[in-house]
Image 1 (tube, rainbow, N blue to C red):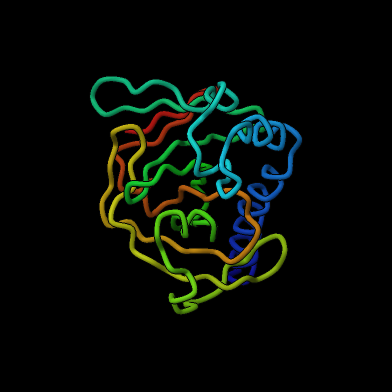
Image 2: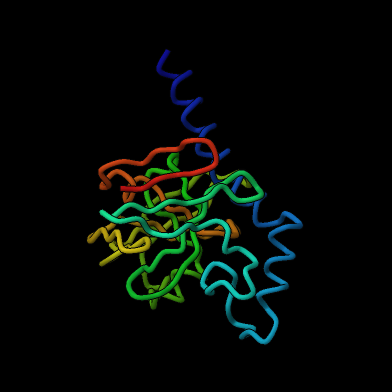
Length: 186
């Protein structure tokens, strides 16, 4: 029984990270990335850049009174949040199946984390197999005015394409609800 549960949990983790990888290779994301690259810095990636020309502005709705954030479902069926991590803007896929916030190497370096100096503290199971991960404590993660301090995260040395906003952030909120094509964070 436990073996089946462990296999199911591992499968869910693989699917979660695999979906992020697939989303990063989809034509819609590639088109958004090309659109955002116009006049941009070649060293940036779409997860660390503010929206330009509305290419992905539909995924994050306006903040409501009382510390409520509404996120609209994107064209790839996922929810994305424009976050501020330790003062740096990062676009993340909201992943309630991820145990912790999972940062791409590129996003971690954009925050100022020297990834190569962090010890490898385990492995993450991805669609491409097991990859090394390094854990780090983030000072602050904010989504449109909702701030959580002291958030555990992992830098995953894999080509995920997008960082994941996982349970180390989400579990500290009062509520996370999905109704139709809208996710509400409180």
